[in-house]
Image (tube, rainbow, N blue to C red; front, side, top):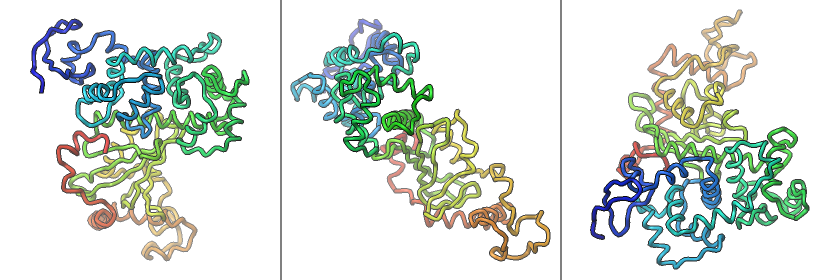
Length: 436
């Protein structure tokens, strides 16, 4: 441990404690920020439209393969190498540890930016790409600064070497990583559709032209594998941002992680609320977004059986929630959905039920010529089995609540996960849980 000493910072003019391995410039303590980081630097990293930040984010996201919001030492090495930057491995390891404050072996985006600045590598990375990623004035008028920043991130995912164009090999590799199986001929056809100067590669301006046609409806997303991959990437990136936000400000009793091999899918581990039939068990909710997210609802389901008046148990053993997703709004996000599902575990909402849920069952009080005292199974009129079950569940909930709670508890004991003994340890504490 180095000796601590007080020093006066030249930027903020305040005194702070430092040692031989000083805190990184982005420390979370807001009272230290004026001491540790120049004001214009803070503004730059906080501005999503800043071109330097956009390019660094593009590079960072492309190497963050698991969409965790963090990269490891070998990924930092790959970034430096692809930009023609070489450093002594021991010296690089020391710098990495300096910015890896929590000793996790990974860097988040801000830590990465400050490490690149410390290595004097940021300028080289940005200059290499900024000269290649220029948009002509005729195209710039069709996009906002935010949209240009978004396109930079997406284009950078395909442009592996940062050369300013997408080669066939780069395109095929990224499409495969995204789960799109493409043959060499399909990749050549994709490039041919976009490559107006017939260079055999896709330049940034050509990529932007394609995205403009997607926005105006000239190209259908489903009709272009590249456009589909970009839109899928946009939805996955938004989901990753929402998961990261929940990691910083989690919902109590909920942990969320991105699926390792499905960047467009998040798994939420929900603790059963105390005082309910679901207490003392864990429930796995999966949320999978599509390219039209958040304007259309994601697919949301429990990966196991959950008995609840607002959920539907399916034949494959999963539990869907059509009643909840029916009310999806474009203003909703992952936090809204997960919080609402957790609230329903505490207080079910009968107003979500479809108006005709009891029609054609023994609980259809408006049916004529039907003996309502007959048990379930004696109703021979056409009615889907799942709807008959729903009517029975609603009957139990409204008229035999103790039996309803008992059945829910039996399902919880059978299919809910037992909470591990170390679940509430500091390392996995629920108040700090955002990523499992």
